[in-house]
Amino acid sequence: MSERFIGSLDQGTSSTRFMIFDHAGKIVGQHQLEHRQIMLQAGWVEHDAAEIWARTQEVITGALKQAGIIGSQLAAIGITNQRETTVAWDSKTGKPLANAIVWQDTRTSDYLAAFSAAVKDEIVHKTGLAIAPYFSASKINWLINNVPSVQQAVAAQTARFGTIDSWLLWNLSGGAHGGVHLTDVTNASRTMVMNLETLDWDQSLLTQFNIPLSTLPQIKSSGEIYATTDPNGPFGTAVPIAGILGDQQAAMVGQLCFARGDSKTTYGTGNFALLNTGDEIVRSKNGLLTTVCFKFGAEPVQYALEGSVAVTGSAIQWLRDQLGIISSAGEIENLAASVPDTDGVYFVPAFSGLFAPYWRSDARGVIVGLTRAATKAHLARAALEAICYQTREIMDAMSAERVSSLASNIYASSTRKRLC
Image (cartoon, rainbow, N blue to C red; front, side, top):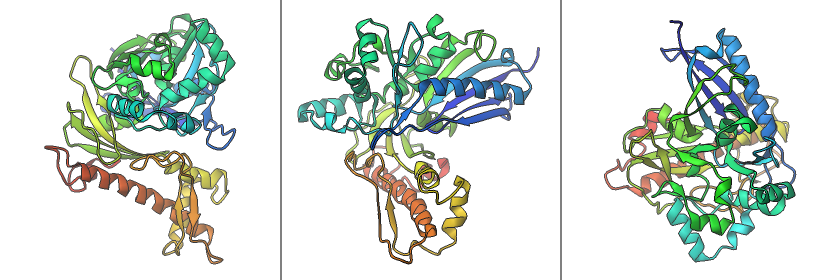
């Protein structure tokens, strides 16, 4: 029998990547492509879901070619994805009904701020999330209330909503010709309408956000066979799709953070620190989120505390694309190292508000301490230091939780061991 391989589809905020691993875990093929960041006005961040699907097909084909194998040699594939980003599509046409609203988008801030204290308390208790436009429910509500094509599809009962994993799974399994509408429990826990205790959609919250249950995917575990790929798709054969996790939860699994007290911090578009709390739902007193860590098949669900920082790597992207201070992200380190300090320049990259532990969606980015002596090198160094400062705040919040039997000194325990 010929050697079998495993494929991993990683759909992120900035790019899409497909990687192929052999039995020993060695990468034998990979391909990655960026997609556009659509910012039509201040606070809005969108993606073209059709472009993401096109890039997905391209990176799959490219990785298979680089590995020198065909789809039938894959034993299974898994999906990991940017969380909270919300796609609306029509089940009959298979086409997106609007641009996807990205997790960084803040257009629903005023809508959420108008909720009563009682409603806010109910949402926080049931979902473990902060009241912030970061999460999916208010994005779905906005699409229903503001996009005529979405309204028409909802009325015709052909509207489908989902996070990126659902959109990719639906397309990979056949799309309008038999695709399945499913999500995993980690992604569902980021929507603001899944109940942490029941692991199912909460009807009271759906009513609050005016989201029809029929438009949402069925919630499954993080590890099971959801479907097989469409033989007419990029794999050219039926490959089992056997794992789905939101990107930060996938990083926990990838770093083997299976034990209570294990933690990791991921550096990407944003920074995200998670702390495994086992089968206990720990409600934070220090501005952290309570979320699902993972659930494999019929095994008990595992929870986590999470500290989310919205803008870290994307601040470097901003220096490159908007300001032109650097021409590639790789230049930032040498530029920042060319000065001994920031000379009093500080950068608060609150482009999407401030996430944990503040949860201030009304915050905006600032650069302070500028003098005539300030150079682009000082700004580059201030941007890198901002990443450190924000991450340190999350570590302080985690340490302050002192969760029951968890290690009280986060720094000295698993965070250093699991740092990505």
